[in-house]
Length: 115
Length: 114
Image 1 (spheres, rainbow over the protein chains, first blue to last red):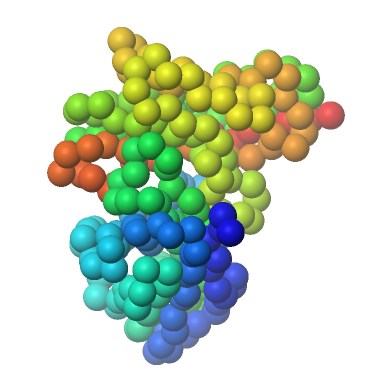
Image 2 (cartoon, each protein chain N blue to C red):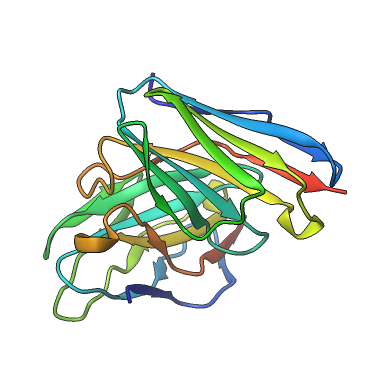
């Protein structure tokens, strides 16, 4: 298995809703990442987990709450989002944090629309 | 801080034309360099990589050489196909205190016509 699987593929939520994005990999990677990508822009790093511990938080608002229940799973809990949070949310994994040799494997993303 | 600069697009080519997308970077130390491709409606796929100076990454007919003296990592392909139409991102992975942060260029949209 050489994939990062993200669910759901599409999500529409209201500003008062609570929802979660899910990411799963079975490559034995020990680092997992959340990126946010707006249309026609490059991805922007949000969070990095290394060995199931949060190691980087890029000053992300608290309405985004990451969770890493085990080495294969990464969740992003969403609450009280704003319309400007609408974007493609990408999950990625790598052998180790900042893997310089093998690169990062990205999922297909969850396209989030906040109404 | 670290940064990546890509040539502005969009780039429009005819099938079988030669492709070059320029990428230059600024980084301390010795970063690893990557090219990622994003097809419409999809996530990013690693296209190729290079981890040290003078390394050449190659995949699916695409090539890029890590040039430390010019801080460049230009992407080339000798004969493009319609199926190569996508957005291409140059990126670097630094060491040191930024360990874990992949820095991307702005992306270059490539459209190939039959």
